[in-house]
Image 1 (cartoon, rainbow, N blue to C red):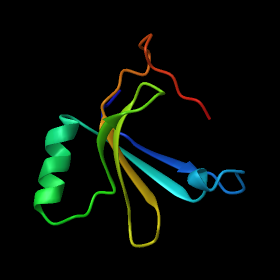
Image 2: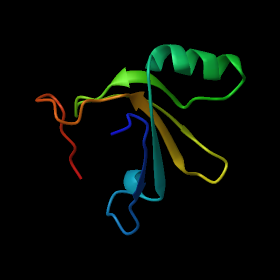
Image 3: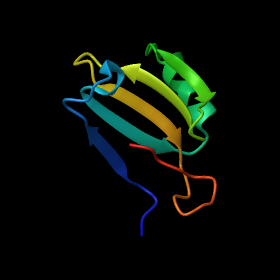
Length: 86
């Protein structure tokens, strides 16, 4: 199985506005370096890389269509420390 994948989360009708709309996740190697390079190109990042309570490290921006674009490291989804809560 390839380590390259793109996840789309479509969540219309959720109670919390934080989850509404389209969320696009990009898994990248060296998250912090990747975001530094994006910022150097003049792209505004709304949330710098940080560790989340659900054990992910993420960085976020909203694109012009108000989609959430999230970058995170490449995770081993079978690892004991990984969890996804919907």
